[in-house]
Length: 424
Image 1 (cartoon, rainbow, N blue to C red):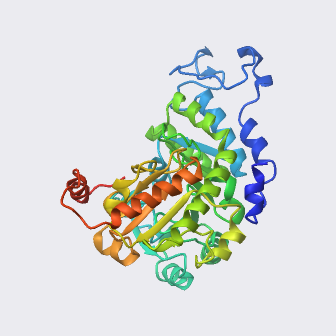
Image 2: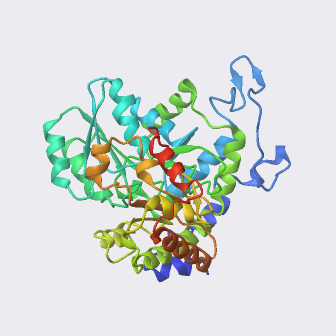
Image 3: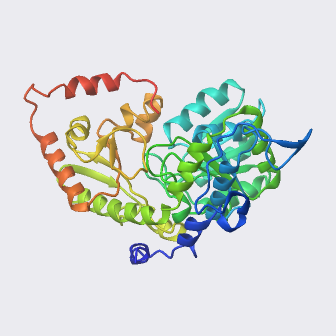
């Protein structure tokens, strides 16, 4: 029945996605030596017995490989329709591993609107290593992509994020991949699929070379694990990624792998409810007199609504909006929506990107993108939709009232947040 939510929105689910999520990565029948436990066991051991020097039974040291991580990686590859998967300690650790393939003098093209941490990494960490980044509007400026590729022969990677964070732009993965490969088939096309998960989008099938996720978000789905992953069909790239896991050491703990695998089991169910609630919130806000504009690909007002119908298999619970009321007052007045960074958990979250997740993006770049102080981002959770809508309404009404001077500390809290230069 839950698939009806997806089909009613005009999307056809990936074949067998619910079964894959339930069973991928682990089959108890294959583990008689462990007494066939119904769920994957947690292997906390840091080291493993060897039958002779240099002759182990598949694992030797947990940083190089761990049974619990192995179960998770197999499940991730299956859901994404990939040959290989690698799990890292965070999404940014995945980015670091991928960029570390490059050398000083190489260049990257990244779409202009991305997660604040991604932007920060390219502007500082990779820049300090001598790697140049071109920020291009890959959502609407494909000629700009072609021009950049032609003018800089050192481009070795193109970084896509779709939908983008936080402006909810869509990038045509197939069109970008084809444009890149036409110039140089060896340029790596990476797609951040965090906002949609493997349930609603499979970038590898659209031409990307690598798909990555912050598993902290929808895949784990319970706001209790920080982790990242990437999937690919390239044996050569996977060899590098596993080498990087072992050599750089940004590997997740076995317990975190177990938690993420557990969360993954319910991913299709959760994503459909996130979609239903997210669409309802977007439509409700669009009708509010306190809201100037709502950004959600499921709305017909979204300029890339048709691309969403063509490229995706659904929508997530991410909604962004420009308000006609004070954004900080609005998020501070919410009750069911928690004022917090991150996204994709079972609970609803609200934030002001300009002073929270994207505070590290340079002010001039934020202004050019339209990440203003009136702009909010919502991660719509799994609560009853009527309760969520009521919470939004009461917060908008409170934010619309003239200031009385007695804000219970909300104004000072907002000012304190504005001084943050880091963001997540």
